[in-house]
Picture 1 (tube, one colour):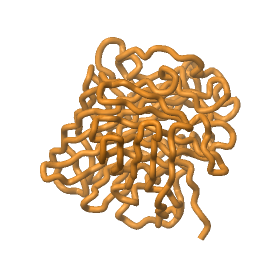
Picture 2 (tube, helix red, strand yellow):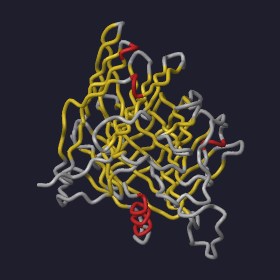
Picture 3 (cartoon, one colour):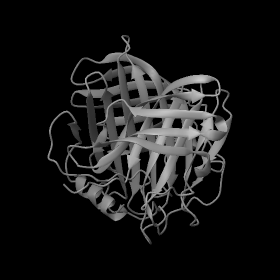
Picture 4 (cartoon, one colour):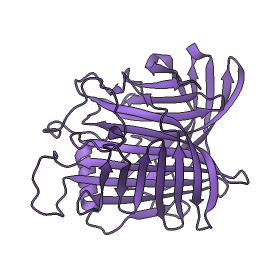
Length: 388
């Protein structure tokens, strides 16, 4: 990954008014246009001067930690979910807001339009029945009220990138985002159930001091609201969502090519998160990790040795020529858990300013208690286009 190239791309994109979107059902040029997907937006050597690094565990404090942490270089608010209309028709959604600092917050700016921060939003809706994947993006500067985060002392927190917003008020979250022909207006409940990932919320990404993020999840949020897809009238939907929240001034260790991230909600009430940091040679970094949370909220933390992970099927994007392992077998031997993970659609590739595969998946498998099913989301990052 090339973080300086990412920042340059986002900065140039700010010169273009408004957002951009595409419907994956529409043909596009067969070339990889976005930079290789980077969830852990990282700094090259020296680019983190003046920023704070995540060094030691510290307790999370709410609502303050739902808001922004400008002393760190990057952060994001990640929401993914699986919902159904009254007739049982399935949809997936993703809404993610990113903050990427160009300079530390104490650097003076002469103009009200000058920005030390770039904000990016990604919206995606998977329409399984129509076999349609719809994506859009917002890019804006953190100035003149165009994008930013407010609140967090004692009241609601609001994060916005232009007309897209996330509002957090106590136990509830409101998501509002739309583009041409698709969008979401959803209320999520259950934010009081928080899982601190890693070591009490400090999640190391490598052996280097400060190569870590502060990371927590809300793994099972109840969803109700309205969803629009493919230009049709909005429909009422219900389901479950997952929130991932991270901030850092982090750089992935040398030799890391990308990662796979799984967020799975099982029908027996267990919630599973696991990310595998993938080395250039295809092997697993020992700093991979995750968590398994039971219905009572008790969490077992996972490291690379706890998880057996095997791709079972690939899909090659016709537009970018990138081959992704979209189906997986995941096992936790100590928990007597074996899962098969299949995408709702193979084509859930996001190819915007950054490129990655992120989409709704279905889960089936076995536990010591018998058969199990579930829903979830899978992210695949750092995969490159192959030659013709």
